[in-house]
Image 1 (cartoon, rainbow, N blue to C red):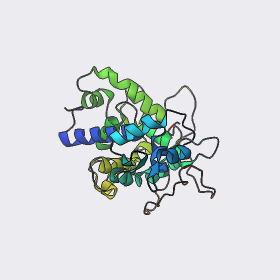
Image 2 (tube, rainbow, N blue to C red; image 1 turned 135 degrees about the vertical axis):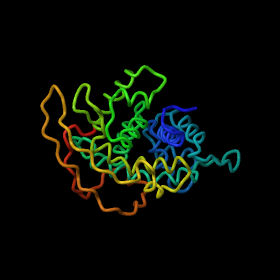
Image 3 (cartoon, one colour; image 1 turned 90 degrees about the vertical axis):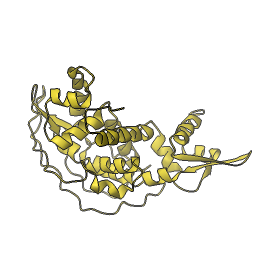
Image 4 (cartoon, one colour; image 1 turned 90 degrees about the horizontal axis):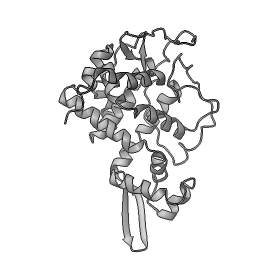
Length: 280
């Protein structure tokens, strides 16, 4: 069943990405997957690695991840059961460094250095807003769209004014820009920079190698950077800064269990956050 007025292939792509993000975004899911990134573990061994979970919280989380096809439960005997990654979960891990890279450049600067795992969780929260994927797809494809036209594409069976709550949220999150009431909407620099992340999630959700992200019909082809627009706000803001320099492509690093649970001790240069950058 179509969820938007977009072509069937695009509609199916958005639905897959939305479902994939919904699998991994719930609290603690990514941390559990990272804890299982080594050899399969018994329940007690896994519980020791995610000790912040209270009694009774881990089992339903594991069950949901098993149902999603990300964790495999193997019963060796009545008293010997282990949990480990499925191939699908293993294929997901290379996407996580892409999310960290985007978060470090575009998320609003926190008061304290954040571990990479928190960068991932904050980013996923923004991407799983209601209708977020469909709105981002349309704005990436069409560059600039009015709210009325966007509503007809994203939620064709609803009253067109229902587009405003998700649009306002994406503007508040710093992923979408507008020059003011009645003006068209377009991706912000941060929203446009989501290409490697959303392209990779799209490839993974379709059962393709993550490297296929570069060939994504919407997010894979480089397009002109959005022109910074003035923000209309009750508070004065500094002028938008130029988008950060695009990093040279590097192979995704091989993550160790501890890499995403603690902040790197070596200082890395951080791009200044543009005015109105994504909020945590």
